[in-house]
Image 1 (spheres, rainbow, N blue to C red):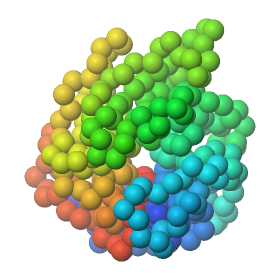
Image 2: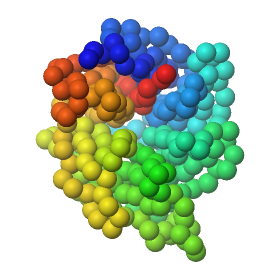
Image 3: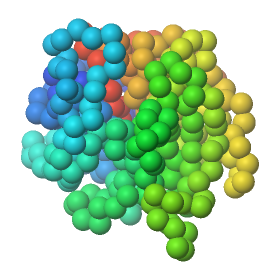
Image 4: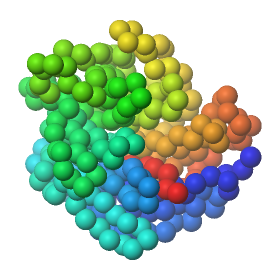
Length: 306
């Protein structure tokens, strides 16, 4: 087992608005585009096409030091696509079609799902931009507690999962789920089937479902925050079990890409690193944790590319 046997990684850089392909074995970086748009965040590969979200421009730019979280409340986020082989870039949802695009997921039928943080919702559309609709809409009066960040879809079991991270380092994060299809008579703003699976988490961010387990990053306060976690998917009507912490010590953990077959998970953080974490029950358990890439800017979304 070696790092060389894995697929390519692609990642988003927050300030320089790039999509980069990373050599897992040697950390080489190839820029696929430097025009990802303002503040790219969520990233998936569907076949040979990359899709990503943008958060838009913060009201205070990255060139201005700030101890407070950046304000992305302007409605200027979008969903975009790139064909790496040709360089063709196009919009799935044009800028202004959502507020703050966060994690992006997809199902096998060609539907993209994303969280809209300051929009306080989870939405979806087909990869060609048609069929745009909201799946979950929270009351914005809930502030940070209502903001949606991570998203994952499980069409085989019929669920969509999402995180509501709560205030920074607030210990009020939650992971929730609801049916992919609205119950009869419900609306996205008034759903009767929402389950709160985990509550009181430090600050859960991105999600990924692999097999019958849910993985997630958490950028909250140590010792339980700035971690990579996993837990079994709860049965209907049950809450989640105590998560297993697979790695910690990240600098604002964000992106996540899991390859259970190879026994490795990759985490990106706002400190500018991508770290490979061996899974304790996988074929790479004997391989030490290592930094795949270190750069002088924040890294957000992370995905595998064929």
